[in-house]
Image (tube, rainbow, N blue to C red; front, side, top):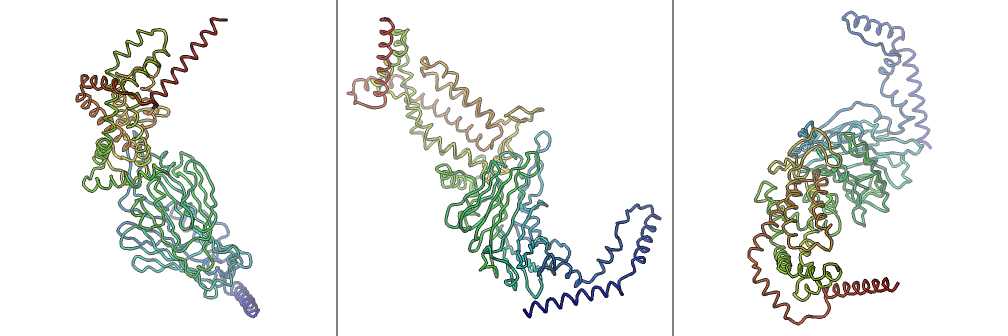
Length: 619
């Protein structure tokens, strides 16, 4: 009570002093107007046109008021924070070998993070690449503000406060000196290198003024994720906000649409993530709670998405709450060093595909990149490793196809024997396959086993920053599409450019398909003869705008497939195959098996058909 009465007496004295100053010492209004008119006259004499602002006298009066009077006026809006509501904006910079931060004294927030050694890529006319300095957190509409609720019901945002700054080497300390000796301090500190920022928040002498009934202090973070890559469509689909519950796996808002998430319980970290760069906040202990939101913006905008986070800092740690900020590239090893599952923001995929990318494909590329600076060479070497590993299965596939080729004359004889009974031909064909020990599906296994690698690589190249702006042959960026030629118009679903690696992949796929299908009997389903060529044509539209690293892999994979097939078939002679088939024919056959079941199914179908024909004749 005594403190409240003293404060009331103090406010009354300030108001009285202000009244006396305005009444007896402030410049006369008419005098100020005359000065303003003289300034206008002087300006017009040198032919400079300027508008006389309205209420000049009032503005000049306010400018001449002492800080104590202005603080008294601000008290009704800012309460104990009133002294920090006055000041001027200053930009302070700290930097190390990899990162430079521009920090504003108003709000005490980072207004630009310069990521050294990386460029932002824009696409100009005719698909040429325009490179600019890459910055994060530099959108003017970004927000990083603490929300203070005072006991008297006032709500104050730290973005409206001015901080006194002190720079000590790679550290800047920002202090908002408040009423009654209270302080609000933020500090940012960089190491000699790297992208980590030590960030501390301290509140001193404010416990009696704040309403912390919500359990802590709320931090509102709004980040407009700007375009940094030439392929903005894929960048948009790989950009969102991630968060890590303290006792659960990392999660994220939708990557393809607007979304809101409100996980239960404490949180370890949050991360606003572009395709290849991120800004993350990792709590020293944990955030009390959080709400997260993404908003997809107009595709024509320079901004991909608006991501927002509201997290609560626990009350018991407001005297010293520590965070690590990571502001930089999505490098797996950098993120892994935090040991808090921050690597989950790299979109390698989930389930088996993400596992293959993280612990098989990524280490293989890392190994090759130690010895080869050009990652295009690393892609070719990866293709070679995969093909050598699968060659035993590839050999079985080629061997099975060769045996079917040797049986082709016998299959042709079956068609001549039953020219009008296709089901009978199929049944006899299955019987012949079983008799000679030929598996018509023997060539599918290598393709099935390669599919996890294909799907994994589909996610790997657009997610791995190691391929960003890495060139190979005519491709300037293996993480994005290659532009061999620009079109003067845009083709729907295809684009306004030609990806040569995609065309080479499609062409070699057609050649490989034709070479392998020569010995296949498609008389039962003639449409399949043409449908097999539809897939590469369809994927021309998909891969034309995809990462050229993937189409490079697929192209060289086809080249090696063709080489393996041609060489292996030359080694396998028809005479040896025929001897093998005759030997299989003379061996006792085991009951069961896929071929046997298939033969039974065809036989039952044949019986049903014969029964239907008998019923028709009876009618």
